[in-house]
Amino acid sequence: MSKRIRLNGLRQSTVGHTAIGLWRHPDSRAHEYRELAHWTEVARILERGTFDTLFVADALGPLDTYQGKVDVALRDGVQTPTDDPLLPISAMAAVTEHLGFAVTVSTTYEQPYGFARKMTTLDHLTKGRIGWNIVTSALESAARNLGLDRQIPHDERYAQAEEFMEVVYKLWEGSWRDDAVVRSVEDGVFVDPSRVRPVRHEGEYYKVRDIALSEPSVQRTPVLFQAGTSRAGSAFAGRHAEGVFLSTYETAGARRLVTQVKDAARAAGRDPESLKFFPITTVVVAETDAEARAKYADYASYASWEGSLARWSALMQIDLSALDPDKPLEYVDTDGIRGMVELFTTLDPTRTWTPRAIGEFVGVGGGGPVLVGSPATVADELERWMDDADVDGFNIADPVAPAGHRDFVDLVVPELRRRGRVWSEYEGETLRERFTGAARVREDHPAHVHKWAE
Image (cartoon, rainbow, N blue to C red; front, side):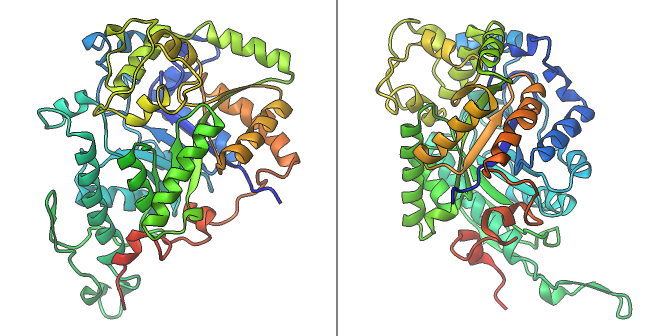
């Protein structure tokens, strides 16, 4: 029997995320990202389509690599302005019962002690539906504005992230016993102090000596996602991730990345088949293939070539405006997101990638394939990706928010249900139960090492 296709909705609290310039389309309401009603509507749409999660991306600095200034990013609304992704989650959880929420938060600019409480709080309020997309942040502008003189080098950010994970695992898994909260009115005891202990962490980057502030949530550790596909990123994902987000345009490239991370998981002593993989995918669907092609052409007419280059310049930490627009891009080590550099150089040798070609190619769906067609055509392509790339589902982007997600739910999901490829009703109470069948981390996960041993 074919495995179920897992679906995540992909958004950022901004007007220009993966599709740059399309906020100008008359059907787009991306500018409503500032309104709570917009996010609750998105959550209801995705839950109606039985999506596993809404994945909310984030950026912690303005995109100023292109031309050495922020002007193009501001004109095209490229990830600036942007709001905090954590804050709408409680409201979205209040209008849904099953949809999970995977939120991007950087280990480089958070303190693990305070962050652990934030995520436990969200796991309490969502009743176990929270996930965390672990990033180390690549933007030089984020470093300048968040207390650093310059960006920490790429591999050192991952070394710091390793210790960050150790600290939050201790806080989530090892500080409070499951039965610490006794709430005994007769004895006048809310928490039994003998069942709570300090973590006493003394490391290179962090010192956290005391008890966790929050009592354990149903999942304790949130479901862990990661998106890095550099050598350091893959090793980190192999150790920690339960879900892995991919950016690649070809099934062969996706399969290589899946194999790379699974090998890292196996080397870390984990079952590689316990990890789930989700490529970014943009879907433009209509009742017929011809109508879908016309819709795509309409969308493409609003795409900004220069705005797309501003986004990718920041991601790769290469000023594409300084290069010959028609000269092939060569791979270089950067302190940016190396997987993005590899995406347009070493990982796909069948294409010649120039800055101009990149800008045109990513206009409607930056980061992954753009599937255009009728519900049957789109479903065929999704099934092909599942088989050829060895992935578990897709991060469905929305180039004309929220119309893209609504179209997918109204047109593609019924076709996938007819084929038995997506569920009609949710299974499991928590987000992790849909991944592993249990609310708590698996025994082969590094977080489990820190569990309070009775």
